[in-house]
Image 1 (cartoon, helix red, strand yellow):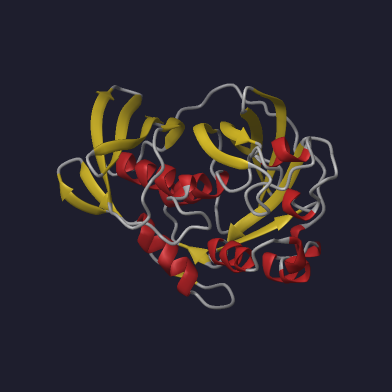
Image 2 (image 1 turned 135 degrees about the horizontal axis):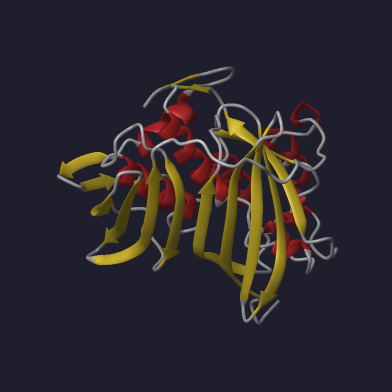
Length: 300
């Protein structure tokens, strides 16, 4: 997997693509490594994307993924490799099903089920794309974060956030929760995103990169409803618990995608985020649902 830079330094995107290019160590067994994370555990979007890569490598190219359902079981160790074991559950005439278990230190840390489908024609409708300003009018992370470095108790947080987003150009329509802590807002958040460079014409690669990004901001809408800034300012402890995606229409992760997110509920130390990903020309490409751990530390 290789990316050619559209502008800027190609190295972060090359590193991300290398992260998704798993090593096959046996039939249906793959090994991946981790990249530095903003928190001392493996980024959930990385594990989900790598697991989808592993599943996809056991399925014919003409059957793209149409859905995935996953559970985060244990925090991943970023200093250790992750082994992905693929179980070929079903190979039908139209649908293929795979189950993937991610293992570290002899224990499962993540479980994914994915379904793939041969193309066929059918009924067509979609919810229209919501209004959003053009991404070019919004500040990039490099423009936004340094201006607000004083909002973070640890100055290294800005560095870590920029490192995590080095391969992904992610632009908030409104200020992210870590810049507006203490102010309650409607539980809805929008971001535009794309890779920082062009990608090969591999549909599975684009789905895997969308999966990677889908875990970056989905619980923001939960935080907004309560005026919480999240882990970046230390007023919330959070982690992804489960994650589901439905891939409706083709997308390109190297072209602008609108991630429209909202939270219908939070209770019991958990928050629910639902979202849709639209292409810039208004096609609904992906639906996403995630429940995450959202705890308020006792000393906050």
